[in-house]
Image (cartoon, rainbow, N blue to C red; front, side, top):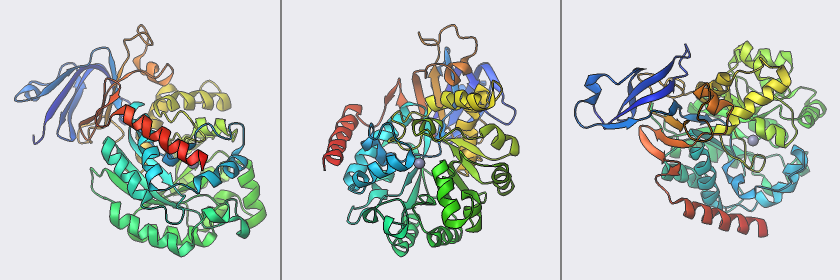
Length: 454
Ligand SMILES: [Zn+2]
């Protein structure tokens, strides 16, 4: 025993381990950053010896902390715009505003977006940042700093766009960088921020934006570079029928075939959306271990379609949940995304298309696997890091519900009593512990006004 000890007792514990073990009234013992005991009933006597913080969690559901596999935090500053557009029209409306971001406004947006994610149970968040205007300062550093201030685990990406409109891409030329500048900045991002250690709070991945906004050269070279640096790869894939048409016209390939040709399928790659995958693509994802970030609210907001998640899971593809950028999902709450995933997949696949507990698994172990962190986080098991969410399920929203897990997966999002990352409290009684929420809201309003009025 090496660190401060915390004992949580009396909660309904959904461990999301391989056997889906649940304890109607269970205990979890935390020592420093690690889970050292999990089981039914009260904590063992040894856990209560010496200084210990003891939490009576009766009336609560304890789950692993939720893992968000796809976000664009800067979009927190451009919510409520292009409300009724499909993806390509929505992007075209927003690019001019996004091209004016800088490190200062992104800092405010990242803190706002992550604050809301944390308050919805998120302990690990993957952010896909791909807009780096000239002379915009240290944007990636601002995102990393915001996660550090809140205390949540970050998988930041060095994203990119190098295919402007004059070259046949979708983004305007003023929103893109050169291929060589992107590759140089990618090396710099990894050397500054990537921590490969077990309890890392910051990791970096390389993330060219999408087939219609980057060159084939950038995709190919980013894949080689990421593998030489030992970091993961991320992009958007097969989001819309318009992307399918773009790839068919430009390359004579489906998006998956195109990305496959460029070295972009593998167990070190995860892609957002994957709505329009045919059987061949699903088989390729499964054979290569390529992961998927399922973003049901964003897909609904932009009328992109419903991803074939039951088929992906049946084939063995790693699938996690993502809120996507806040300009296409103004909620930004990961907890409610579980319910959305369950409901939307039933619309496509029928009543047995997705169980509530499958939704919880996507948001925890699924996300951990997609981010390559499944040995350290994603379930409540001895030897894993203490990233935990404690939900109050005896209040007016949920008192009397037959199944506490259904309170989270089908009901209103329960109040978050406690959120621990590496054993430290990030949210307590529904409020962030390390930043003043009023300050976060004020800074978001100021930065949003600056961006939207320019
Ligand atoms: Zn996205």
